[in-house]
Length: 100
Image 1 (cartoon, rainbow, N blue to C red):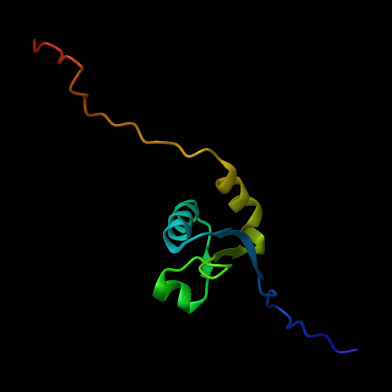
Image 2 (image 1 turned 90 degrees about the vertical axis):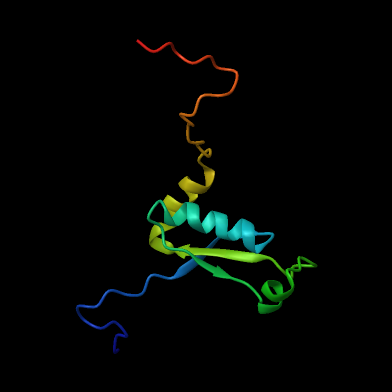
């Protein structure tokens, strides 16, 4: 029985749905968050959703896809609490330290 596998070549890594977003902006924010963690991402959506910005009866929903090999890492990023960066700028209510 012949094998479809080519010697020395790894089989393709299938893309799996990670989550579904309600709009393009939400999906792009998630895409940026995942990519900044080194995870490859594809967004899958209907053309009409992007053209018209509709979210109606499933139209406008965007699938966020990741490679199967990175799905567990992507789920960790997705479920991790978002960390806000600290701002070093003093607030207007904070008195400035006296200069020496």
